[in-house]
Length: 351
Image (cartoon, rainbow, N blue to C red):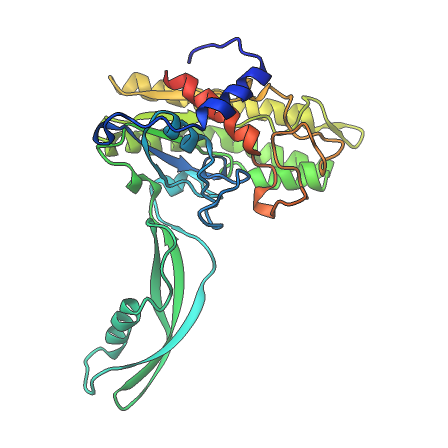
């Protein structure tokens, strides 16, 4: 990764003025293709301009900004709440819903339920998926027949395809953040920043630290599969996370320094993810695996949440808890300035 001496103010100005500006390739057929995988710190929570509010995919996330700047085509398969397993396996998103309909089914049909299901799918009874990698699964819950009329109630489950399905041999680069939800991001935020319970916060931190070593092996397995799926053509960029708070010391009660514990855990996570990428690169000759530390472009701790006033935070590049004008799923996720800072870090790692 190229080292830069830009000030944070200069960096953000460059990000806003340059990273988000389109620079179309001279020949669209020759444009590189980028794919984004991972969790909410990749899909777009907090950025605005959402395509939908299940995965919270935004055209203003860091990958979309870099793709526009480089004149690349771009696919966003990241999804809020994503874990490492979602890269390789389907994920149920949203809650089940019930739909009832009556269709004509010829008398004497061997499998009336199957014929009803076929008609229900043709009629898109569960609805039309809002994203190309989403699909509805249909399962009959109850049914009744009168003559040639067959009435059934179907359970509809919305499912996202494995994120890796977005990667093809034509993919030139893959961007992602992953691992935060595997170690309990939401629980840490709730116990340490919202409830501010020393005991519960420590329990959450201890659980996260115990999980980090397992995260390394799972990350390597998933990203090796991404490399193989691209037939070795895609360079994989794994981005770290910014500091969540603006200090490395933040005491809960009289004894537990949650800030020190959080800082140490985040730095450890960066070391493990960097080591995973280095090991993948070493074991796969000619492959591109790069870890991107976004913390310097975020100003270190500077733009984390202010622990003394979580609902205000004018200097934070993260959406504060209970932030005015934001929804729950946007809390403690990058604001536009934060997304631009991550874009700048990625862009610099690619050039």
